[in-house]
Amino acid sequence: QNEWSYASGMASYAQALESEQMLRQATSAQNRNAWMSAGGQIAGAVTGGAASFFAHGL
Image 1: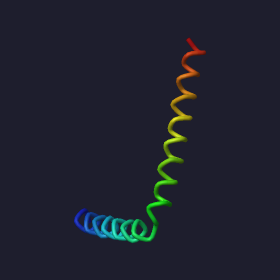
Image 2: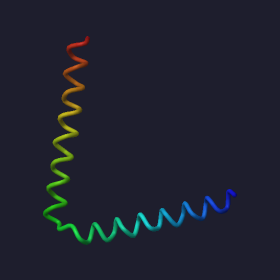
Image 3: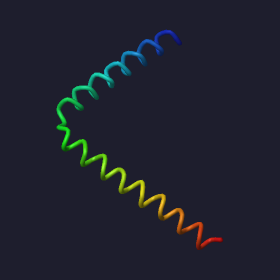
C-alpha cells in the first residue's frame, strides 16, 4: 500500500516537474519578469501593510 502510493506520488511529482518545465519554456523572459515584478509589488504591499498595522497596533 505504502509502496504504491509512494510510486504514484513520485510519478505525479515527475509529471508536475515536466509540465512546469514545458510551461517555463513556453513563457517568455519578458512575461516572467512581469510576473516577478508583480510578485515583488504584492509582497511589498503585504509587508508594508503588516508593518503599518503593527505600528498602529502598538
